[in-house]
Image (cartoon, rainbow, N blue to C red; front, top):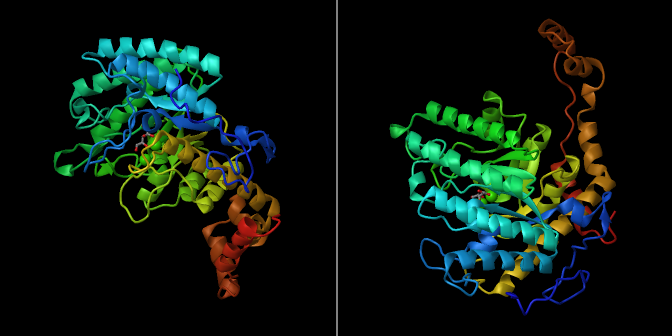
Length: 441
Ligand code: XLS
Ligand code: CA
Ligand code: CA
C-alpha cells in the first residue's frame, strides 16, 4: 500500500528551481569538507512527530490525520511502519529515531506491551533490510503514561522506578536488535515542581543508579553504541534536572557516567535554557562529549518548546561549524525532532517541512565549510590568544607560573598597557560576507 501517492521521490534540482517538492541545497552525493553531504549530515526522521503527532495542543484537538487507514491499534502500528519507510525513501533519509511507544501502542500490562513491541520490531527489522535504513537511536517513553506523573528514575515511589527500569531494559533490547547506533535518555518528567515535596539528592542519586544499571545491561547484551543525555531546562516539569549541557556534564562526572554518555543537543532546548544552539554544541565539543543533534528551532517570542522545523541558516551554519570542528558525526546525526505547525496539516506539508529542514542544514554545512576555508574567523581567534604562547602566558599555560611569579610580573609591569579590540561587529560582517557574498570563498 502506498500512503503518500501524490509525492514522488524528492530530487536535488539546485537553488534556481521553483518546484516546491525539490531540494535546492541538499545534494546528497556532493562532496563537502571531505565527505558526501549525506555522510556529513546523517539525517534522521523522528517517528513521534512525523508518524504519530496529530497536531493537538492544550487548546484543541488534532488537525492532521495519522490513522493510516485503520482504527485497529496494531494494524495502525504496522501501517505506520510501512508509511515511515515510504516517507524516508521518498525524502532520501537514511536513519530514524523512536520511543518504544511510538512504534507500538502500550498494552494493558507490561507483558502485553512487550509482546507488541516484539511484533513491530520484527517488522521494522524486515523493512530496514528491504529499504536500507538504519536506526540512529532508540529511547523509552517514560513520561507519557500517568504512572510517571512524579517522574520515572527520579520518582518518589520505588515501584515506578522498577517499572521504568523494566521499560528501559526492553527499549535497549529492541534498539540492539535493530542495530541502533545510540540510546537516548531524555529527562521526561525527571525534575520537580516544588522543593516542598522533593528530596533532590536522592532523586539524582537514583537517576544515576538507573543509568548505571542500563549501561551495564546494554553492554552485557552487546550494545556498542553511544548513550546520550539530552539536556532540557523546563517543560514538562518546572525544573528539569538535565538543565543544560554544563549541568549534565557535572552530573555525568559526579556519578562516573562520563565514559559511556555523550550529549544529544537540541536547538529548542538550548534556547529554552537561555543559551544559543551553538553555545550548547561548543560546550559539548570542548568537553569531548559531542554526540548527536536534535535538529529543530524554537520561537524566540514564545516561552515553550515549539519543535519547529529548522530554517534559520545563521543557526544551521554555526551548528555545522561546531560539528565540523568536532570532527563530524561518528555515531550521531541530525534527527529532525520537529513537527509541522498545527495549521500545516496536509501530508504534503510533512514533505515540504523536511525539505525545508534538510535544505537549511545543507546550506549550513556549505556555509560552515566556507567559514573554515575562508579562515579569517579562526585566525582571529588564534591571534587573540597569542599572549599565551610566549613569555608569562606560556608559563600560565604550561603550569610553571606561581602566584609569587605572577605578582612579581605584575609589579614590574605597573599596569596593563595593551588590550586589543575584540572587533565583534567586524567579525559579524565577515560572517555576512561569507554567507551572502557573491561567489563565496
Ligand atoms: C522532548 C524531547 C524528546 C526527546 C526524546 O522535549 O525532545 O522528544 O528527544 O525523548
Ligand atoms: Ca529532542
Ligand atoms: Ca523539543
